Amino acid sequence: MTHGLTPDLVPNARRLAHQYLRHNAPVLWAQMMASGTTFVVPDQIRHLGIAEQARWLAATEARRIAQARLFYLDVEATRAAIDAGSVFTERPYTLGPGLPPAEYGLLVWAEDVSASVGGADVIACHWQVCDDGVWTVWWTDVVGFTQGQLAAGVYDRAKVDSILEVHGVLMYDRERLLPYGIGELDGTPPDADMDDRVRALTNTTLATWAMLSTGLAPTVVLPGGVGTIAGLRPIPGADDRVTVATAPASSDPTGTTTR
Image 1 (tube, rainbow, N blue to C red):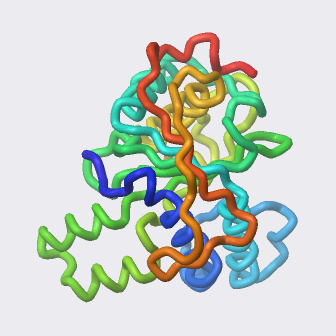
Image 2 (tube, rainbow, N blue to C red; image 1 turned 90 degrees about the vertical axis):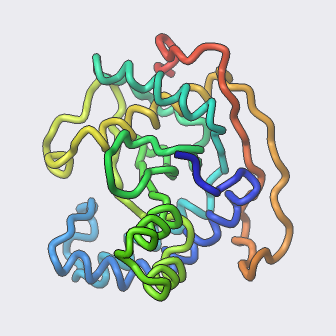
């Protein structure tokens, strides 16, 4: 199902995500970590307390979001990426540092890419190309999820408004380092609990990068908004232009994933 996050709204979605990571995530993540939620914590901060770890993790993601180039896949391109990603369910993926279309990126898909039944739709991801792999974080459609809960009588309006005020239009879902080379998600921690939902979104992410970086998907670039929009100030140094991808002539990524 499509959502209401159109290409012109992607800069605002980024600003809201950045605001969440800077102001709300440190406290919420510390509470989650204290209650047993697992985050991927690098070795260099394992000696810190939970609150310090949460602040470090949130600040690092905020910096990544601030530097990201913005991308949007329309409905046809999203479906082509999902179809192309299904190839990786039959054989290991191949990933090199040149596959993502930018060193730092944030992209939004027009539809859910997690192939899940129930739960919030995964509609976005951001990443950083690193020395040992591509650090990738996925985000869910918090607006669609809360509206569904409201319609089902699970949430009332006050609950919905509270969640949206904290998270914005995207909700941080999970993070992974996707290692370079030929491989597959191997079921070891923190991937031990990975299910079809997460495998599907990982495969679609790889196929999306291939479509964008190889020029397989036609694109247009929209100018970013100027100044404060809906009460949100621009992120210093951020490029708010949005690269919008449409359906490629061929969705077969074979031979395009090694760079």
